[in-house]
Length: 199
Image (cartoon, rainbow, N blue to C red; front, side, top):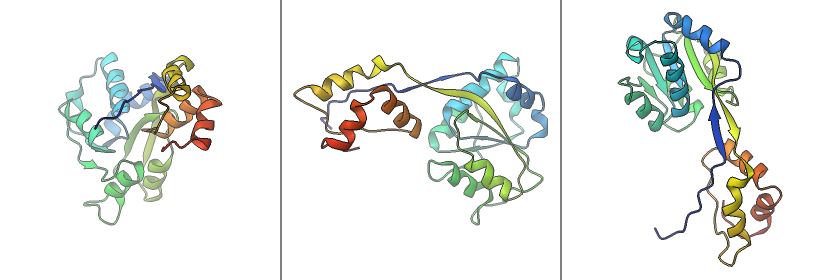
């Protein structure tokens, strides 16, 4: 559309520091009826953990899957697995609605134990909503979200002080906002508060 875009990597991902809970859940996969994913990154790290343990993805063909958003569902499809429930909006609460809400077809209940592999900083909303509906949920950390190095923000800071300036900033996730502010402190927050920048 004619804009000049400066892409700034603000977060990166890594395996969990303690993989024992994830490994324990993988050893007991047959106890779960549903696998729920809130991101494509969660799918990547969970299935990498399966691969590291010699478990093929097609061994999960009998399970049912829930996904937050079409990108997460597409990541499952790339593994030849179909998401049975997809959140209408791109958030965990919407997936809870699809699983146990008033409009859910065949709502989940106590006989539908779920495994939720997620980020270390994931909010508890999805698990809490399902548990309040009587659904057994096991949450495990599949990956960590880490802030990027400060130097990755240098192109933004140079443009901020240059003649052309910055007209807008687009964030794709809450963790991107937190990391961006840490990487650009204090200039990024000052620019957002004091300059005519659309966010």
